[in-house]
Length: 298
Length: 258
Image (cartoon, rainbow over all chains, first blue to last red; front, side, top):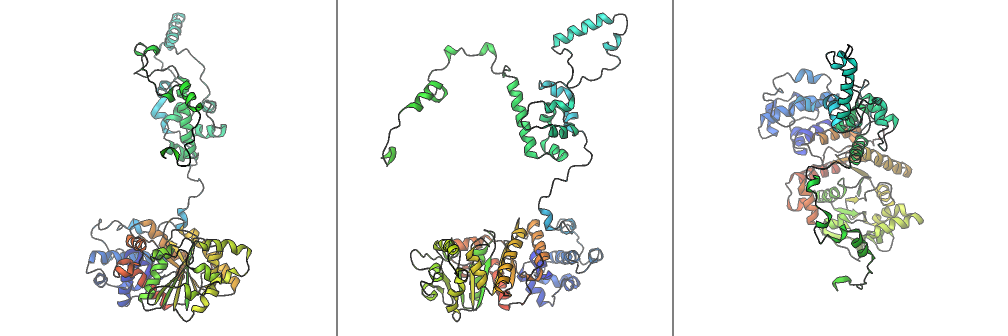
C-alpha cells in the first residue's frame, strides 16, 4: 500500500478517491499537499470543506510517515488547509490525527502505571473514623482531644471526679477505652481470605489501613494507586462485606422488630416443599419412574 | 494460471467473503476464474448457494479418486467452484499418517492449467494445518487477509512467518501480499491499525483496503456475490479495485523483516 492509497482509505472514498487523484496526476503525498483545495474538491463533489480537511490530513500523514518531515508545522498554518470551523467532522481536530502511539502500544503492558510516591488514599479522608465506627468495625485511633476538653481540666484538683465521670460515660456509651490496634496490622488480621501481609502493606501505604477504609475505597482508584489487580480488590471488598454481615447476626432490619415478629405457630400454612427440609428430603427419596424412551410426554 | 491463496491463522477475518468476491470481481473483469473451497466448514460453497451432499468434492480430487474437472460446479460461464465437504477435515487427519499429502492440491489443480486464468483458494482458519500448507505450496501469490481489528498485527505476523517458512522450504519465491479487510474508517482504532499495517508491511500491502459492509454479509448469506446484484455498491468497487491490482500483478519483494 503506498501512502497515497493509505490516505484515500483513511480519509477519502478508498479506491474511488485514489483513482481520481491519479487522474489529477498525483502519485505521491507531496503532490496532494501541493494541490489547491479547489482541485481536491472536484473529487468530493465540489465540497471544499471536505477538500480542505483531506488536504490537511495529507500534510499530517506525510509528516507522520516521515515523507515530508516538518511539513505539518509549516502547512497547517497556510490558509489552504486551515480550518474555519472547529466542528466540521468527528475527526477533524488536529489532536485526533496527530501522531499517536504506535500500534504496539495497544497491547497491555506490565503494571507500571502506579505512581512512585503513594499518597494516602482519599477514601479515608472522605469517610473518616465516623464511617468506620458506624460500620461497627475496628475502632480507629482516638482523635487527639483539643486543649479545651475536660481531659485537660482534669489536671486540677477535681481530677479524680472528672476521671470517674468520664469513665462512667465511656462505659455507658459502650466505648470503654480500648487499645487501638496498630493500623498496618489491622487489615492484615481482619481474616480476609487471600489478603496477605504484602497486600495489606501495599494497602496501608495507600492509606487503607482498616476494613472500613477498604470497603469505602473506590476500587479502580485503589487498584491504580497500589498496583493490586482490580478483581482482587473487588473480591476483598466482597469478602469484607460478607465478614461484616456475619459479625452482626443479631442486627435486625427495620421491618423485623421483635414486637412485630410472627409467632412460629401462626406461620402461613402450605409452605413450599423445597423450603421445608423434611419435605425436600422426602421428594428426593421418592423412587424414580421410568417413563420409557419417549419420556413423560408419550 | 495464477493461484491466489487467501489465508490467515485467525478466523473471522474475512477470508471466505474476500475469496467469493475477489473471484466474482476477477470474473467480472473477464478472467476465467475458479474458486477452490479448502475449508472443511464449506462456507464458500454455501456462500455461493451450492450444496454438495454425497456428491464427489474437492477431498475426493485431493485423494486422487476423481479428476478435478468432474467435480467442478459452473456458477456462470467463466466462473466455477471446486466445492468442499466436511471430508476435508478427515483428509487433514489422514495426512498425519500418509506421505505426499502436502502436494495434493498442486496435483489436483495441475490438469486445470489451461482451463482458468485465476484460481482463488479459500483456506481454513489455521495457518499450520496440512490444508493451508497445501494451498501455500500450490500458490503463485499468497494473500494474507488481515482484519483491521484488535490482535490483527500479532496474528498476521505469526501467519506471515509460517507462510514464509513453507515457501522457503519449497525453495520458491512466492510473494506474500497483505490485504486489509473489515476496515471502518469511522473509528480511530481501525485507522490506527491500518497505519500500523502500512508501517509494518509497506509495499507488500494491497492499495485497496476492503471496507466493512453489511451488504457483503447479506450477499454471502443470500448465496450470491454482491457484484451480481449490486455492482455499484461501495464494497463491489473495493473488490473491483482489488481485482485490478491483482491483475496488474505488481512485482514486489516479499516482506521479511520481522
